Length: 23
Image (cartoon, rainbow, N blue to C red; front, side, top):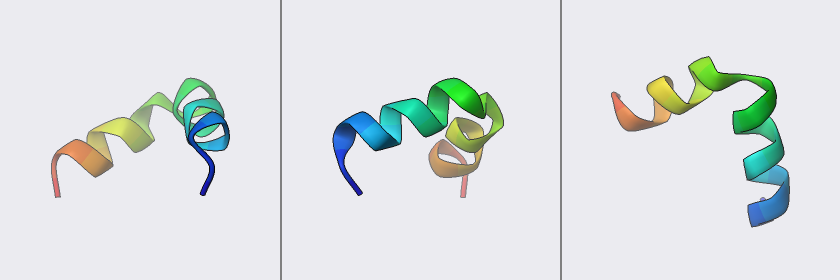
């Protein structure tokens, strides 16, 4: 996944960041 796309996903779905940081 492209960094820009990943950033877009994190900005659109902040809960995803928690899922990635905390397995």
